[in-house]
Length: 291
Image (cartoon, rainbow, N blue to C red; front, top):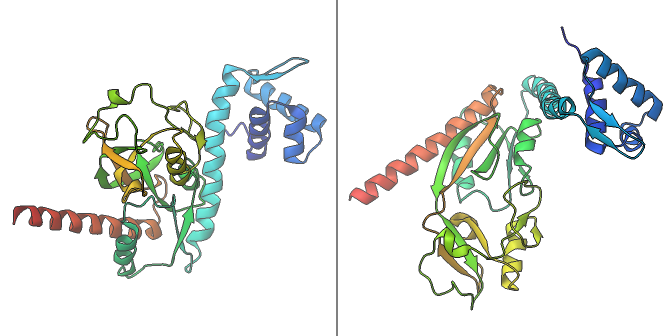
């Protein structure tokens, strides 16, 4: 038995996000008394309080926090299911690939060329995202496949295949105390100012917030911080900056990811093409090393 309707979940998520019934009602374009009544009805049906209401504030209870997390996933799943159902019936649907600008390690062109040889290849639309929302594009159905960086992007709920593994480097300005080093360790970065990445919770640095690599490199140029990045994102490095390998930093993996519930031939065909290119590139590299 389904105890909550999709619309009720939308009402709850709006209040949980805003923690204010007036703002949530405005966001939903409904009257506040109707929204309050709907939330009370949900709480009665579930048999648990979802919010602590006082004259000054609204807070989530533990039950409310659990419903917020899982309810959001449920709404995303419903949205993705609707989009995929519509697209499955569209023989001319394009494949949508989400990446961040410059975040393909040079693989995008050869993978697209490999995919073009597939008998069922479709037109590929490239979508650009911010620093931390590519996974949202995949989970809510706005994109079919995406190029993500592990371990930085959250791969929970996504199927994925590694296409490329690389080391990480620290970028410093000229004159920095590490500038003359051939290599460094993570401990050498203690006390340094690192960026806070916009939209990426946890693991934040203490420096200014940046939204992309371009902003980061600009802040490094003016001596506001340093940054640790996958090598391919700064290859070649910007003029005047110095790139140093970080020998003990966990490797970065560029992965092709898609919603693990998405089994459409449209997606499977692109994944097969990407893996074919990866395997061919690995074979060529092994041969060159042994010759």
